[in-house]
Image (cartoon, rainbow over all chains, first blue to last red; front, side, top):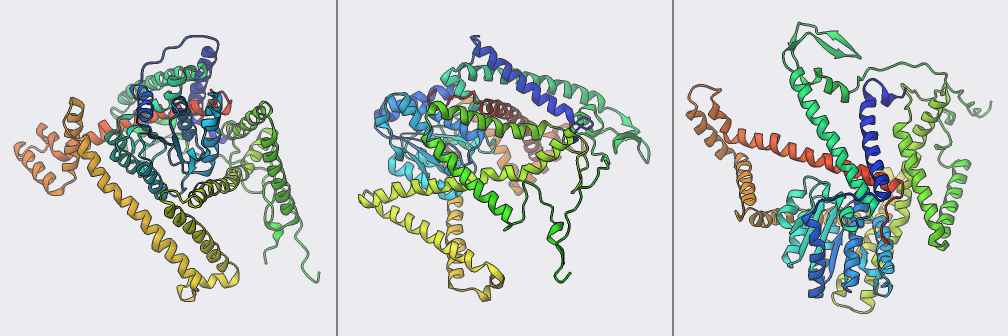
Length: 307
Length: 302
């Protein structure tokens, strides 16, 4: 048994594997031709409207995939931007993808070029439409704000990891009258986007976006798997609430200490959350196990001068 | 004197400057450049399986690091007692080296970022397009900062470099670096950050207008929280409500003190909502990671 499986450590891992199994099973199910239902998301309906409006005005569409490097969130943002770029390419609308990281810039360039090629519009692809701005937070904020003002962007898409710069982008774009669709995986920035943008994808809607837009079986299956996982989480929450509520009543004279139940010194006390089964499930005992192993032989020390 | 032999080395850890470390660096560099050239010349048909394979292997390493039984109570220099433990030791030892791979790739890619800036701004200056002066400022700043930064770093190397910890020993280049970084860059960052205060005000003005039921609820909630943070107002309102409750400290009306309401909104409504969002985000991230690892995602040409 490994360190991570000791005591109740295996419960968290089993839950994560169960969620992964749900997602993978539904991906296989959807790939096999099963028609799966996805509800409407209003923020995503606005994508076409925003690009269409930019095309009418003849002004560019500006996209920012967050402030992080090449993370899963950035990849998801780029995934949504492929859809935006495809519509913009069909309308011959200029686009600008502003990158805060050289790796994102490289991947973004490849993806955007692929979109134009797959649409048969390779001649419309402008390599300068994907730009590396700066990897410093506020230098990036200043650079993107400057581009929004100079190019008079008609539609802006801010999706991915955003921090303090989120409101600088959103308010600058609002200042030039751009229609804005935004989403941040940072819960602290979502209120800023809600206050300043026209449409906001909240929480996991960001991850659902590509499934809704492309209707690829892999993505819709994955989304249904996510819904199954959320049902599992809801069931766990209800079970945990009931168990904890009933267990936490009354007094106790024993507590879990150093890997075993021990009598509390100084008499009984009121039960706390740490005394409940749910707490034990997700907080494995910190008890240390001693294992004696042979030591490897140390290499011979270099001979001292003169010896 | 501590002999070098006491420093533990394995395949992943070598003594800096040793011939085996230098050989590994040269071989690694050649293999890296070879792989990049091979990928560039390869047709998409052959490139895809290679990328899918390397993504799978890279992901598999971290999956194994998470799932494979981790060694219990491991001390430096200990030998594994069975093959399961042996693989656990190997995975643990390889982690620092594997984590460095991402940093090395990022270092290569920063060159591409600089190339992007040069292509756009040199072109703009050459054609004297609108606002080309700003492009010139950008390029001069970029190369100036890099040059001065490198010269400052070089002056701090070696035994003489330690003396520069004391500002009295600084030379001209150290003062220039200090002026450019602390005197200009940091101040400009702070100026950009301070703009947020004004943007919050203008965004709040638009958001907090009672145009609909939802906006009115938002306005009411925000007012309670903002007023609860104003010491004078929260004190006076709490006192007024406590008077209504009379001498009973557990009076029901005491639950409606401004500070109690603000605490309830933050701890019961806000925390619950954010946790709900975080569950969804976590599960979505897990699904995306699985799709990326198994290369099920089709991006640009979907």
